[in-house]
Image 1: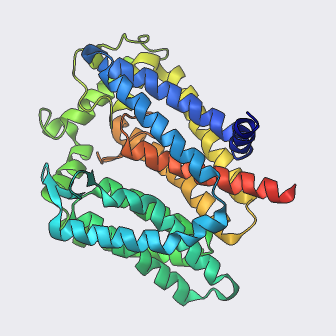
Image 2: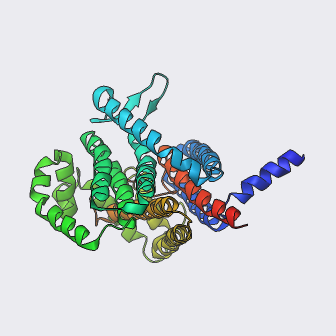
Image 3: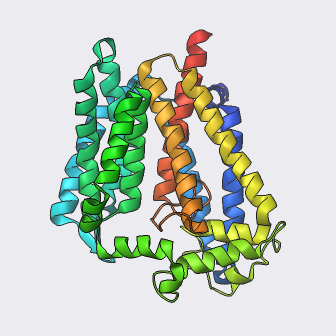
Length: 367
């Protein structure tokens, strides 16, 4: 009995309660919305999402108990493993729906690009920690190369959404490490000048997404269908929504991918502007808590890692809500802790576990 009590005290000691409460609130909203989006098919998706959450929660607990110094030792092996697996995808990957994103390992298939969402900030934070005493321009150049290598592999698959998240995770580490503003302005200007060249390199489906963003009605039954139906659902929610399980666009099957990428349209139709405001408050609290943890972190590694993970949560939410609302092109980015799915949820909860590790181990050291 003492061992059980000691184990439970150890678990609680490594949980950041404010962060945990925010995440649990978001996951509760997610469960309700997933059920609403899939209620016509019974409880199957809801049951699977509960299993996904349980698995992700266990991973969060394990990572939260792991000291940041130990996490730092995994940075290089995890990054190298991710690169090798991405190379394996390029050479031997399984093609699904025209994209080569999966690698078959016999009894299971994995998506190595998901590994890079965590491996990238870990690797760059480790690199800047290692060179903290003598950071120079060349270190930022090397960091950029470390970032661009996996992005190139993921773009080749092609997977624009995942490459965006990996790129954001890496960029935030480089930015927080002290990348000069004049360099960022120069990069932005260069990116603007390279847009015509980048357009020519984009796949046909990616070009169609951009053109559909400009005028969804140009292909209302094809590429523009997602945006048109999602914006109708958001608008029909009005100020207070149609009520739980009362969304006509949702339950008449007009919204595509309604339990995954477009779940925000389901939530907006049922809860309206008021519900969206509450959801934005929850995400703001999540990001604010993460930035507080980053600000109080004791080492450069933990500050960079916590800051990057927190800002990636912002990118997840901003890109998903933006694409569902019709202000950004449609890319495969789920709404964090709300959308159905196991892989993305595990990645997100792993990030939460890292934030808790950084916060609680700092507090334990102080005590």
